[in-house]
Image (cartoon, rainbow, N blue to C red; front, side, top):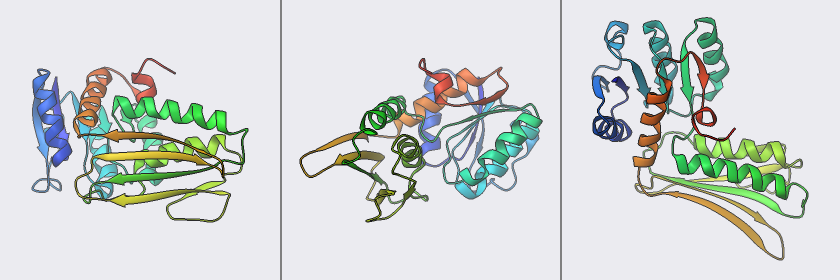
Length: 239
């Protein structure tokens, strides 16, 4: 499989190593030196693109892949205000988009655990739920895309939580997310349900970027030949 890597930072380099180890070829690398100049003709050499760039560039990169008629796996977060627009364009142009806030298999199992726990806790309103997420100091968005996905699951299940906020809050109708940026932490997400007698906490700790990179490559392998909009629920065995 020929892959275009759009975004060649630390994640891009991890993806490259895994892709090469699985027998794929990298036919285009897009980094700061060619981010404004790479063409659709260059993209057409690829069977699939994997996009891990920056929030400000993600949508234009996706649209370039649509123009080149190649499927794109998107791991960049921080651009979700445009997600509905991108999905509409994907459908209208009969293109292929795979988007996930996190490609780690472990994190996606954690999503299912979070959803199930929130359903269980929804009938015990004396427990207050809050979240903490920790990432490396280079991460540009806060809260993380993973934290937003987790928070949206919780808000959907816990009826007294009307929305999430990225700060400390005493408002019981708000789900508190505390974001920390520390050294080179790959990613830690914790959800806590607490009351005056006890508390329950679930945590996912990433030890490296390799889990995210492997998931992205697996998604790219799975996506080739398909049309439409997909995510990790489609890739993994559960629904």
